Length: 214
Image (cartoon, rainbow, N blue to C red):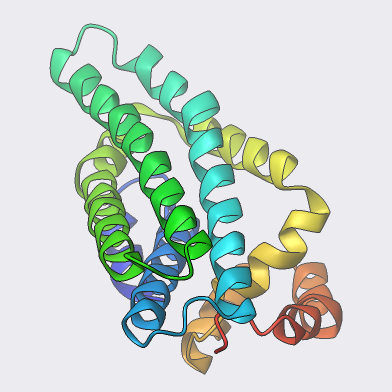
């Protein structure tokens, strides 16, 4: 969780992108786990399958709310700026590229892992490129165009779509494998009830699933 670096990137603006960055970091981590599992020939195990299914759910929610709420907000503010509108079109096109790659991984898993190493590498390459493109170009545009109230509304929409049940998986998923210092920074930004729920209920339940285990 490289939130120290990410925090520095957003410190000059009025919108705090910490949650966006830590979510992106979790996507990268899980893609690395998939690639490693495929290379080791253990990707057909139940733990890896469960980890992959959770990854897809988290990614689908993230991109769905971006498409339905965030990009339309930016588009309104970007009217009259061809470069900004082109960037938004790129974001939507990149989202559309990802679903077929996930389906290809699913098919390789269904085929007992045949061709999975290549499919996993391809999915990681395309998605990591998208995440970097969004961080380097789209987030600065958002910082320039949107007000904090716009970002708060988007974050609120994400929480509504996620729901309490989704949060019970999302929070421990974000900090899975994160060193103590990073966990402390992350939970320091959370409301006290979230920290308590995660410690007593969410994370113990999450760990029992043994996602990505062999």
